[in-house]
Length: 146
Image (cartoon, rainbow, N blue to C red; front, side, top):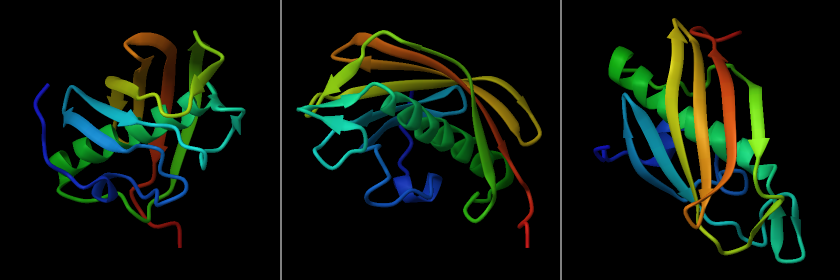
């Protein structure tokens, strides 16, 4: 997968505090790879770990990066200010928690797309070990709701 230089802020609206993705490893039309490292400021933190449920948010942010990139390439537009709805179609967790400071790598790939609806499959790895497999359904509006 080739690397394309983008600032994360160009692809997802999350800011400090809720943006869990630290680094965009790669993104192209076939997928996105991101890395995140849990800190003591992350949600769902307890006794040196974070709950593996954060994999859902990390997957959603990685899916947002992928969809944002695809739409930018297709339409030349950013998706900021638009309404997003993300649902979990399927989730399997292979670890209960992730140690703070360990790198979490998420691979996302498109499964299906139709207009503004996308199904994205993600694989979450911690130290190259499968931690979660999550399938998300993403829908965004083309117009401002106002």
